[in-house]
Length: 336
Ligand SMILES: C[S@@+](CC[C@H](N)C(=O)[O-])C[C@H]1O[C@@H](n2cnc3c(N)ncnc32)[C@H](O)[C@@H]1O
Image: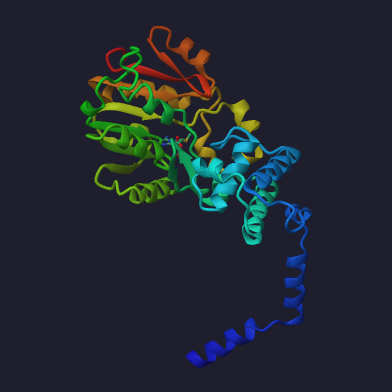
């Protein structure tokens, strides 16, 4: 029986004329990368320049961890060469082998032809310099909250009076609502070394990716994942800190999402008509899940006017980051 199976496999592996023609067609399939003759692009910098030209020519969108074509091309070059993005400068003028160049050009080609975010092509994204696994089961992480964990929540700005949490060591329980890939929960576990972190998402697919990241960082003892609809997933639990980057794209935004975002789960974007359906539910429910000295940090995109109109008496503190203005607010349990 085993012998028969083996010979059947051998027969199917044999190249028929049809298979030969298909293989030839595959080799000859035109690709953007074939515009480049071997040896024309020699260094990492040459390849980045080429990538930038292709991306601009094809009008690709940059909204997934990079904000411009140079950073996007450099990210793909580094990933293909197993380099951390911070190592790009060191090797910018180093030459690549023909095989490496082909790998990079193929990635550029896939980026332009499929419009998939670069992070999905290489199954990786960096947040605050740390690598996270990512695939199409979850949104590509790019929350401004990563930066705020390092600035306003880390005690680093205490002297300037900008710290929202004076002593990160005093935080023992954190909730990451709408965790997606789990990246913010993992970053929070680093920012608050004495805390356990609960992370909630409604999507089992996203949680499977989060579980992989939690395992990669060896944080199974400190980061727990729960599936459910916002606070429903955690019963009566209370936390010193709630962080959340919920879906917040309004109907107009949903209708105009760039092609890249159509590869991502739409449940990660859709915030209803004005984008704030989930934000309202989070604001209304947070008081019952915060400790008396606790606070909520929430990203909301461009809904600042709608939200301040809806909650005129709530003292929301708007926090800016390097790439955002008025897209994340902080509110204390006391104010809620
Ligand atoms: C904008 S993504 C943020 C993911 C991650 N926190 C990040 O910053 O990359 C929003 C996430 O909320 C999840 N989600 C949507 N509706 C939800 C709900 N009702 N309850 C819990 N999670 C929800 C989506 O599955 C998605 O993973």
